[in-house]
Image 1: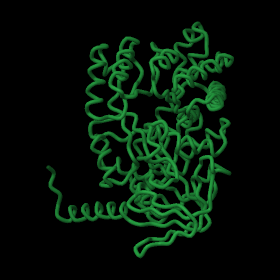
Image 2: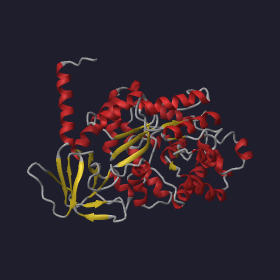
Image 3: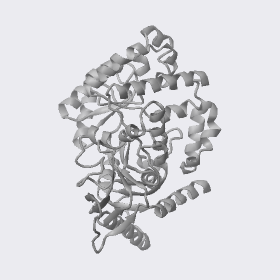
Image 4: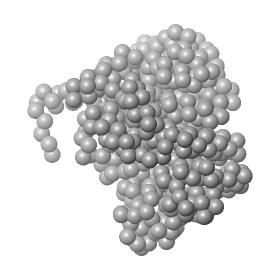
Length: 450
């Protein structure tokens, strides 16, 4: 057990007390519009939160003697967003950086995170977040990766799946490099254990087989390009580079409806992470990425690493343009065909700054053809439905967790309004604009000083 100096212990205890007190407080939101993002759309009503849950919704709710009344000033209150493809920092990156990332998510209205590269310490973090001992989003965590280096045989893959399920991870994460036999062993064992698996589509497996095997999510649209070209075209390209982007000029979009139908019928969900691909496609525009305001919230060593990674990218501007255009067609077809889409940006990766990138992802979905409300739902009720937790979060309804975002403008009219945050509540813990600004300023100052 690590012993802290007396003053550090006092400060830590005070911080934990404030988190617990915030979670159990009584808040009443008035003078605003509630955006349910469901069939009833919106309502002009008050919303009361007690002990971290939505306690009442209605007109002219009366505050109690200890209620903190929050005047929305004509603004909009919506459910918190979910970042459904994220990477929670590993312990070797340091607790300070981890806490910065957690805060950046919350400061941008992200109240649920699906961590795609798990670590044993993330199980403890999930518990601490739920207990309000650490400030941050609700955590859904994968176990450590299943890939060509961590898996050595089908039998070992099964054993690894059993170990992760027993440890309490929420799902299994697939990365490239698995043989089909190893992949099938994971899929079969996951089905037997009742634990979902998702992520990438290994080259030897292919998208059609992954769908049939019950892969719960296909992230990054991985395997899509390969599934829409002839085998000869795929072989000639050497696999099509990252996520098959170099195959875009050979794609037969007439195959797309059949692929969409298979995914819909199988109940496969898709996490496009379009901002990640847009950043990779911007290899010839690195200065623009460095000049984004949110880049100030990346540690300098990550900025350098991302810049070096993009400098090595070889797609080319014209090929990138084609790939992005084809991906937009794929996203639109999936949405129109009834395949569930989940909001995710793969932060923090390649200039995707935690939290800030989720606004860019929403804008990318709208650019692909979703309406603003449809895009917002990929980060609110869709994650709750995907996780079978509609009785816990993802909407504005009595009894649900008080994950709330106060916006100054209406995101159902212009989705970029999700950037205009006046305050965030994460499971009853209220952070006003001044608190958010203070936390952001602290991070920016430390990273600038580095």
